[in-house]
Structure formats: C-alpha cells, structure tokens
View 1: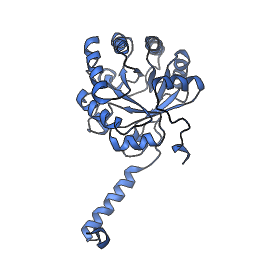
View 2: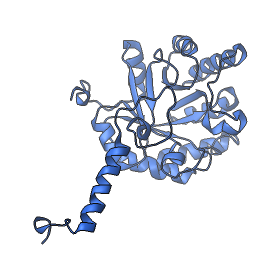
View 3: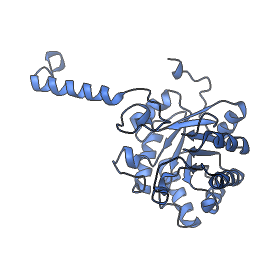
View 4: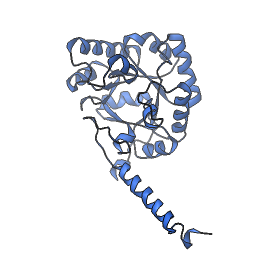
Length: 273
C-alpha cells in the first residue's frame, strides 16, 4: 500500500517539523500507548507518535485524563519508544506534574525524558505555564504546546465543546500561541477550535501546528489511534474519521474462537504436538 512508502526514512526530529512546515508537507501524528501498536504505527509511516494522557481513558477506562500518573506515562512511553525507529515520540506530561511551579515541572520533565527515552514532551496551557515551559526548554527538552480544548482542564470548562468561538477567547489563544512559539516550542496542538482561527494561528507562528478538530489549515493532524481504527465504541465527534472497524473484526474473531473451543474444533490435529 502507498501509505507504507516513506520517501524520507530518516529519524523524525523536532527540526524536521520546521522543515515540513516550510515545505508545506503535512505532518501526520497518531497516539500509541503500547509496544505492539507503536511498531505498526511507525512502520506505516506516521511522522510522530503521541503517547497521550488519553491512555487514562483508552487503556485504563477512566472518564477523564486527570487520574493518570507520571509513573504510568513513563511506562506507556518507554513501551512505545522500544518499538519506534522513525517517528518522533512525544509524551504528555500528566495533570499535576507541571502546574504547581517551574521547579516541579522541570523535575518531572527531566524524569520522564530520562526514564522513558521519548523525544519530546507535550504540555497543556498558555501563558499560565509559560515560565515552566521556558524552564523545560532551557534544560534542552523539546516542548509541544497544546491550546484550545485542553482535556486536563475539563472540570474548569465543564464541557468538551469547541473552544475560542468568542472573540476574547480567540484573542487569548492567538496571544498564547505567539508567546509559546517565541519561547521555542517546536509545535502546538490546536484542539477543537474554529478552522478559521487555526489558519490564523498557523500563519502567525514559526512552529508547526497540529490540529484535532481544527480544520485542514493546520500543518498536521493527530487522532487517537483506537478511535480512528474503530476499537472504541460510542465516541463519534465530528472531527473523527474511522479508517477501520476493528471493534467488529475483533469481536467476530474472538466469538469464532469461543465457538471453536466450545465445539472441540480448536485445536485440531495439525495444531497439536
């Protein structure tokens, strides 16, 4: 399949993000949380793998991303890193690991980088965390910012609705993006913001923008791999395109296995020693 063919097989770095933006080459990003899935995603040619705190939902069954810990993120990220040869691996800093102060955020950032082996970190928020972002960048750690709908702040927002629809919030998002860009972030994720605003932000910053529910005017796109493969059920936001129905395929396959075991068909003579 053509999607498996990658013309540039070099390891993707944060500098490559800038190169791709300058060339007008779209950046593909997907989440992964385990060794097996990450290996498949990397082999398929995805430019970047996000070890998202969405593991809290997808892997652990939590309602929000808030419960996941630094230790758990390190576990997921280190599992992903072992499988990846080409993609840039970005790990989310979980809720509570950087909001307290600059020192706390820097300490946790260094720990995640050292113990997971990932390539970069992602933090949610704007000017409120700018000092911490600068501290992490000063330590030589690449930072991807995250604006718009920031799931770690769901209790503040009270809803997963589109953000920055009103002028005041849109102006703040633009200001935050510009300051994060000037600080040295290599990318900014824009989640569930109006497409027109995402275009304006993309033009205003030197770093790459990665959209999720932000239209096609960003420099790249990200989706949760379990959502786009159809493994998750009952979650169908407007921005989600399902590329497979693995939920049905897996259920049918497992159901057939159960039937074969119950009937005595499995294992047969060829499958026995």
